View 1 (tube, rainbow, N blue to C red):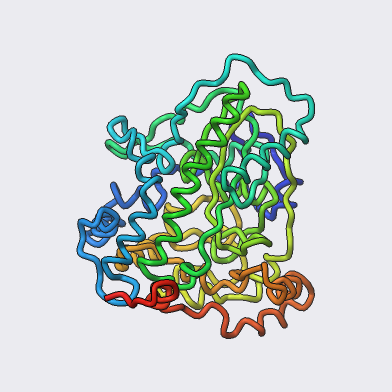
View 2: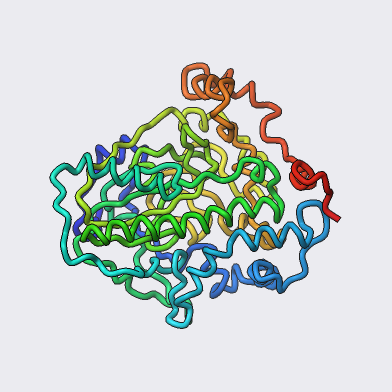
Length: 396
């Protein structure tokens, strides 16, 4: 196969991470992700998708019913505010920062470079600082160019544009941000969308602050959210978790209930190793996410190279969703859907002893027993109950 420039084959690391790259591999063009296609591709764009995006500006009348009231949409949209401020600040230049373009640095790299004598200690320091700024997880891996998008997207005309990344970047710091478990339990609803928006706003602040810290040490650091590269392969390679049927990374701390962000840097750092836990074996016998998907966008059977449309990377044997079906349901709701996250048996509160014991069962030879113990797991919570729990008031 043809490998991207400066990227050697990584068979051993791929095997440890559960990444199965085939000879048909092609790097992904972000222009083809389902959200970007909704702006240029008539196969995806519709009145419903336009209303979906408009609902985040409250230009579209919210749906009626529990979880879809004006209050629910108001909380969801407020949760996105910081992320929106960052992503919109370079709109006139065609850069939607954090989504179709990397986040522009607000500070210069310090002229004096701090000497790093121990990359392992530096990695520990970065993880400590990441936690200080609010990240829930942090792992570090090498910059594998296979997962870098072929180009960024100029949002003025949705054309390809160069990334303009600094030379010499070699490491990726991956940050995990826990989503609120009480809100996740109310998916699908506009209220639940606040769990997504809050973490995008959190991660925007956190990656910018951590990148600034690194730049003030005299090293390059590019803050990134959904832009520039596929984050899931980096998260898996950095040892944060394992890829699952529901297209998410299952972590031992929070299950699938996270958003991920990343920083590209030339700071000398020790890299973490992938940590396969046994999620793949559990997903082989579990289809709860696929069963629960209203539009049947999630796959059954073993991982494969099959892709439903251009919104999927080619040449990687894995579980792959039908992004067009998935996004069409989001558009009808006027909010995001994460039923697959809610019903996932790994979506648990691992501060509780019983759930930690269940995790040991699920990741070991008794996984079938663990699956049988999940029959009633992941039931949807009524959004009105969330509003009532603290205020005693129901949504009018």
